[in-house]
Image (cartoon, rainbow over all chains, first blue to last red; front, top):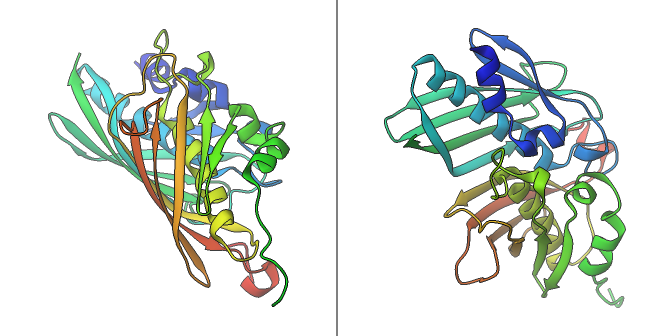
Length: 135
Length: 152
């Protein structure tokens, strides 16, 4: 099942950005992206858009995993995302993990955090609302 | 005080950054600008899609597009150039972009204070009257590393 969720979690965009699944924590995918030119904004720092892409991908990843766990099939459509940038993303590996804070029938609310060295010191967080259309 | 206000040129800036980094990878292009707004184009590309076998751009690149257009809109609106950092950015995806279509991101800086700047904008896929997304964001001016004490 982990493999199925793994494939669902990563869009062509996410793979092109260099995002991979680092590990699974209690059924939740922890995503990783290594620092390279693809994610660089101002020199030696992550571009805010790349950090946002990592957060968003982790949000869809945890929602896919939760839907798989419940044997639910749905097509996911973005409603919105709000990203909070807390600390500069430095030139090193970043990680992200989401949590489904509310799973309704038609929509889900997801909280996501991204960090580098210390999960307790996130570089960015996001809240996402996602529409689920029965597939 | 008598020096003319330095004018930030988004067209030139896009040329300078388009060969490198995240925006270079996305292939962002300059479209248009005004005193306090900038519009950039995100060309459709096979490897930026939301689904395998689909034709619709993922939402992540739209976030990058709007972040970049917003930063440049702030530099248009600012009296003097200062490095800025995104505090927060909200994107409402009101409809999917058309298959195979470029997405255009236009952001306006409607207020600059001593420390912060505020933007709003939208993304469209050809018709500005029929947006695919709306955005709102807040940015901070970066004063200096020494003054801030740490990287926050």
